[in-house]
Image (cartoon, rainbow, N blue to C red; front, side):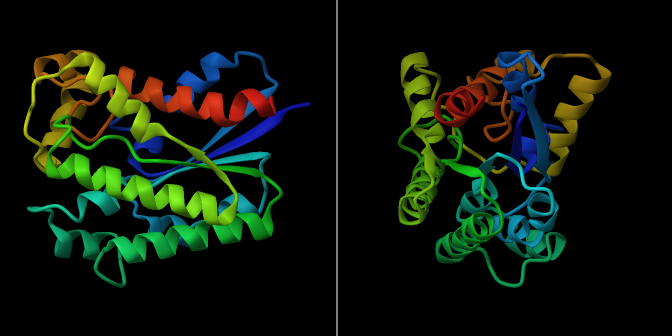
Length: 239
């Protein structure tokens, strides 16, 4: 019997700019008994994910993972181009912590009402690598909200943020200040990776980053932790 797993999220799940955690999950389960489906859209907020659940509930999987909130958390930080992003992502209101939690609650409510899937909410990855900086505090605060939503709705909570903080403490990285990722930097990673054939990990090393290429998008080490917490929390038990 095949276990069908749908992974919902933003660019980290889309894996155009990040190392592909779905590929890593697939390698952990090389048999055809587990099938993964990708539902990731670059730049999505929790609101955007809520708008596109039809594709998931129309053909309900056995397991659903939700990794959303990175862009919601980034929007709470200084220098984030809120007005520009609201227009591009067609957000009906300004991003806020309360609206994020409301949208995530609605996502979980619909998935519970219209599927019989086992659902797991991941806390968001660490933003930046300064453990006491504003970006880290924002990712921690949004992760706590995700934990609250999971507990209130009796779905699994998968502690990705906590696992990444643990990994960063162990690595003792240089305290590189967090700054918002500009589109040109994202394109730069694509050029280095796709044209110059540099690995995402080599791009990370050049920038002194442990888990990411740009303090947001994941290298193989960061993506490996995503795969690890999904596998430990949901996949291994369901397969």
